[in-house]
Length: 128
Image 1 (cartoon, rainbow, N blue to C red):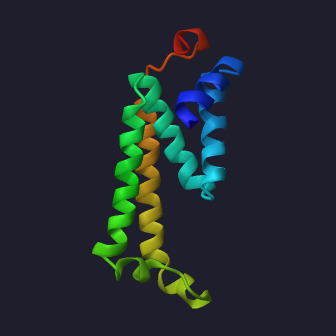
Image 2 (cartoon, rainbow, N blue to C red; image 1 turned 30 degrees about the vertical axis):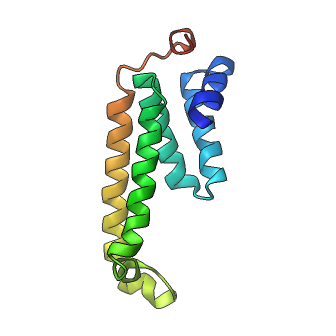
């Protein structure tokens, strides 16, 4: 729905990046994870626009959700080691959380940059 319908319509009404950003923001808000799901939405939108195939972002979403679900069962101690339950945890677990945040942010921004290079900016070339 977000890539096949909303993205295409928003590109026609605004611009390529306007469609990507607005549809990704809606995706993030509806997933109750504005930052993480927004960035995921941007990557999924870019994948769809680069490949013109809805199956690519669908498979990415399946893989992402499968890895998230598997991590709950395969490494049950891992989320607790970085989870913050009270104020003292902020200081004791700041470094692992900071490292995870920086690494994942760099990975996401690198993926967005790699997928966005060479993307046509004219909405006529996208909406065909």
